[in-house]
Image (cartoon, rainbow, N blue to C red):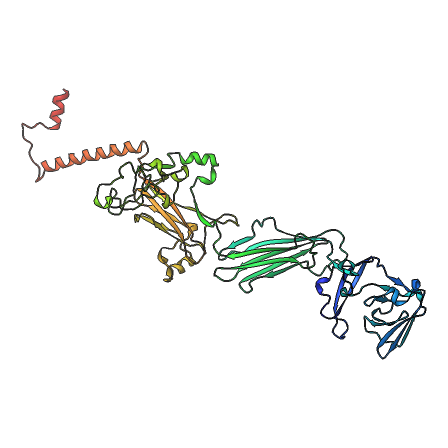
Length: 542
């Protein structure tokens, strides 16, 4: 091929077909740099025999090649048919075992000028009639009709497929800070491939859109008819960004329906990643049993209508804006003082005339989220001593559920501004260092979620919010926990024993006081007319 037309490395594996018949597969590409005549050449594997236009035997003529100052003249020994009747400029004279010549000019019926397709230098060459052939592999511009082009390239049949791991369900994946993703891509080979890939050359190639912002390591496993590439992707920079991984079969045919797999990875907050609080009984019950447990009065407490929890001003002086188990048609609970009357705002029930119009579903009635406080009717019940050890887990759409643990350090606040509770956890070295870092908001109240203990000192509703430390996740991780604490009555027979003991102590105290007051100042004489205890009992029982 000459001028601007040239073979390319991408042509390897492509079919080269002759119009007269014959099929080859390009197996090797070589770029020519030491000649001005041809830019490149390819080696082919003949899959179907090539049909020639004519031969020396058909022309009944031997071939003589003469070199005159670098110009090669191809002369026929007879004029039976001659060059003009059988050949055109652009056809090739092929001599097995010798260089081929490309016909560039037809001088007469017995003489033509040709150019050797490889470097060749010889004075004269004589070829017998049965040892040379003419093939039509001329240039396209010599033929007006495309259907008469003497040769053409055609894509080879598909022998490859590429599939991503079955666990990869989406085109785009989101990773948070500190997370990594492992996945695999598999390439398969089937059927007969006339140009098989060498075993030491991978089939799957990888390209990364954004370099330097991630660490990509891979493990390639090759078998006879397949190749598996396992990739570990780890973000390196703590900032939001996006990249794409492209896995492609560089040698696959364009006739294959799928030759590449592209995955987009976003380093941001994964949708659905959150902190989840579980009641102590939730993991042990089926969905049906769980629904029944929500209605069980022993595990849940039904809040009074329009309930608001106590404040630091007093048990019966609510000041919070959150109203629970709301019903606009009924008065607010403990609404006696001016500060209570000026606080409390409806959410779902705002502008409604009754609870039935607030849109509270069964799920919202047992919710623990502050934004649904109007609908919250039942909350988790704890009896004194009210100690809560929260079962906190981390939910992620792409990874298994795991207990919440460092580096997700947390702090706990009470939504309704109650202060009669304590929060403790094990002071690990990492937690101690964070508590000393004044650049971290709320650094003094940071806790380790894996050993968290909340102790409630009062009664009524406690509505806690657990918040994860900032900068450990792109997500705003938080969870609400609603607990109602009540005092307990003493178990039988302790209640009656204590009552009897108190009565006895009171009687003894009164008796001792009486004796002390009447005997104060020494040995007092008891009047004769005042009966003693001994004379009283004698008179009564004798």
